[in-house]
Image 1 (cartoon, one colour):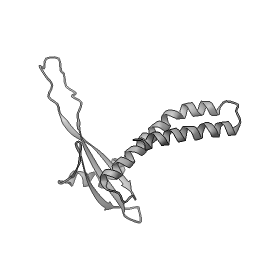
Image 2 (tube, rainbow, N blue to C red):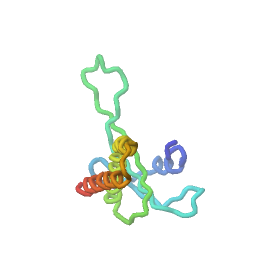
Image 3 (cartoon, rainbow, N blue to C red):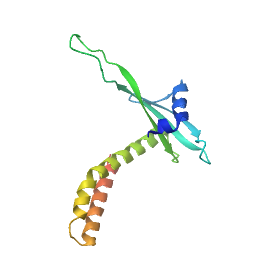
Image 4 (cartoon, one colour):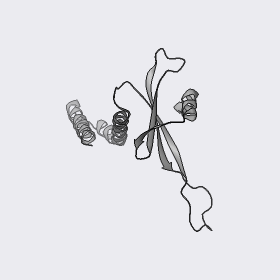
Length: 140
Protein backbone atom coordinates (compact mmCIF):
# COMPACT_ATOMS: atom_id res chain seq x y z
CA UNK A 1 0.00 0.00 0.00
CA UNK A 2 1.42 3.37 -0.94
CA UNK A 3 2.05 6.02 1.71
CA UNK A 4 -0.45 8.32 -0.03
CA UNK A 5 -3.21 5.80 0.67
CA UNK A 6 -2.10 5.22 4.26
CA UNK A 7 -1.57 8.88 5.04
CA UNK A 8 -4.32 10.79 3.31
CA UNK A 9 -3.22 13.85 5.27
CA UNK A 10 0.00 13.91 3.22
CA UNK A 11 -1.98 13.90 0.00
CA UNK A 12 -4.23 16.66 1.29
CA UNK A 13 -1.22 18.82 2.15
CA UNK A 14 0.01 18.46 -1.43
CA UNK A 15 -3.41 19.19 -2.90
CA UNK A 16 -3.94 22.31 -0.74
CA UNK A 17 -0.47 23.72 -1.39
CA UNK A 18 -0.45 26.77 -3.69
CA UNK A 19 3.17 27.97 -3.41
CA UNK A 20 6.17 25.70 -4.01
CA UNK A 21 9.80 26.80 -3.63
CA UNK A 22 11.78 26.22 -6.84
CA UNK A 23 14.59 23.66 -6.80
CA UNK A 24 15.54 23.88 -10.49
CA UNK A 25 15.15 21.48 -13.42
CA UNK A 26 11.37 21.34 -13.14
CA UNK A 27 11.45 20.50 -9.42
CA UNK A 28 9.88 22.43 -6.58
CA UNK A 29 9.36 21.73 -2.88
CA UNK A 30 7.85 22.75 0.39
CA UNK A 31 8.54 21.38 3.82
CA UNK A 32 6.45 20.81 6.89
CA UNK A 33 6.89 19.64 10.43
CA UNK A 34 4.23 16.97 10.69
CA UNK A 35 3.28 13.72 12.38
CA UNK A 36 0.61 11.14 11.70
CA UNK A 37 -1.92 10.72 14.48
CA UNK A 38 -0.32 7.49 15.67
CA UNK A 39 3.20 8.94 16.04
CA UNK A 40 4.44 10.65 19.19
CA UNK A 41 6.61 13.41 17.71
CA UNK A 42 6.73 15.66 14.67
CA UNK A 43 9.32 15.14 11.96
CA UNK A 44 10.62 17.06 8.95
CA UNK A 45 8.83 16.18 5.73
CA UNK A 46 10.02 17.46 2.35
CA UNK A 47 7.36 17.43 -0.34
CA UNK A 48 8.94 17.35 -3.80
CA UNK A 49 7.14 17.72 -7.11
CA UNK A 50 8.75 17.19 -10.50
CA UNK A 51 7.23 18.24 -13.80
CA UNK A 52 7.12 15.29 -16.21
CA UNK A 53 5.64 14.43 -19.58
CA UNK A 54 2.55 12.32 -19.20
CA UNK A 55 1.91 9.33 -21.41
CA UNK A 56 -0.58 10.06 -24.18
CA UNK A 57 -3.20 7.31 -23.95
CA UNK A 58 -5.53 8.09 -26.85
CA UNK A 59 -5.37 6.99 -30.46
CA UNK A 60 -2.54 8.63 -32.41
CA UNK A 61 -3.25 7.15 -35.84
CA UNK A 62 -4.92 10.17 -37.49
CA UNK A 63 -3.20 13.00 -35.64
CA UNK A 64 -0.56 15.09 -37.40
CA UNK A 65 1.25 15.65 -34.13
CA UNK A 66 0.74 14.85 -30.49
CA UNK A 67 1.00 17.83 -28.15
CA UNK A 68 2.96 17.17 -25.02
CA UNK A 69 0.92 16.92 -21.87
CA UNK A 70 2.67 17.70 -18.63
CA UNK A 71 1.85 16.68 -15.12
CA UNK A 72 3.65 16.22 -11.83
CA UNK A 73 5.20 13.33 -9.98
CA UNK A 74 5.32 13.72 -6.21
CA UNK A 75 7.75 12.43 -3.64
CA UNK A 76 7.72 12.87 0.12
CA UNK A 77 10.94 12.55 2.07
CA UNK A 78 10.92 12.07 5.82
CA UNK A 79 14.31 13.12 7.14
CA UNK A 80 16.13 14.10 10.28
CA UNK A 81 18.95 15.75 8.29
CA UNK A 82 19.42 19.48 8.74
CA UNK A 83 20.45 20.01 5.13
CA UNK A 84 18.95 22.32 2.56
CA UNK A 85 16.12 20.77 0.59
CA UNK A 86 18.37 20.42 -2.49
CA UNK A 87 21.09 18.59 -0.53
CA UNK A 88 18.58 16.38 1.30
CA UNK A 89 16.98 15.44 -2.03
CA UNK A 90 20.40 14.63 -3.55
CA UNK A 91 21.27 12.52 -0.51
CA UNK A 92 18.04 10.51 -0.69
CA UNK A 93 18.31 10.07 -4.47
CA UNK A 94 21.80 8.68 -3.90
CA UNK A 95 20.40 6.27 -1.33
CA UNK A 96 17.74 5.20 -3.84
CA UNK A 97 20.29 4.46 -6.54
CA UNK A 98 22.40 2.57 -4.00
CA UNK A 99 19.39 0.42 -3.07
CA UNK A 100 18.80 -0.22 -6.79
CA UNK A 101 22.36 -1.48 -7.12
CA UNK A 102 21.86 -3.81 -4.16
CA UNK A 103 18.63 -5.09 -5.71
CA UNK A 104 20.53 -5.92 -8.90
CA UNK A 105 23.29 -7.66 -6.94
CA UNK A 106 20.91 -9.71 -4.79
CA UNK A 107 20.49 -12.65 -7.22
CA UNK A 108 24.24 -12.73 -7.87
CA UNK A 109 25.12 -12.71 -4.18
CA UNK A 110 22.52 -15.37 -3.38
CA UNK A 111 24.00 -17.66 -6.06
CA UNK A 112 27.49 -17.07 -4.65
CA UNK A 113 26.32 -17.86 -1.14
CA UNK A 114 24.80 -21.15 -2.30
CA UNK A 115 28.24 -22.33 -3.45
CA UNK A 116 30.25 -24.44 -0.98
CA UNK A 117 32.89 -21.82 -0.13
CA UNK A 118 34.33 -20.74 3.20
CA UNK A 119 32.67 -17.85 5.00
CA UNK A 120 35.79 -15.71 4.74
CA UNK A 121 35.58 -15.81 0.92
CA UNK A 122 31.92 -14.73 0.98
CA UNK A 123 32.78 -11.93 3.43
CA UNK A 124 35.59 -10.77 1.14
CA UNK A 125 33.31 -10.74 -1.93
CA UNK A 126 30.56 -8.86 -0.09
CA UNK A 127 32.97 -6.29 1.29
CA UNK A 128 34.37 -5.69 -2.21
CA UNK A 129 30.84 -5.22 -3.58
CA UNK A 130 30.06 -2.75 -0.80
CA UNK A 131 33.33 -0.87 -1.34
CA UNK A 132 32.75 -0.56 -5.09
CA UNK A 133 29.14 0.50 -4.57
CA UNK A 134 30.09 3.09 -1.97
CA UNK A 135 32.87 4.54 -4.10
CA UNK A 136 30.55 4.70 -7.14
CA UNK A 137 27.87 6.52 -5.15
CA UNK A 138 30.38 8.90 -3.55
CA UNK A 139 31.95 9.78 -6.90
CA UNK A 140 28.69 11.32 -8.16
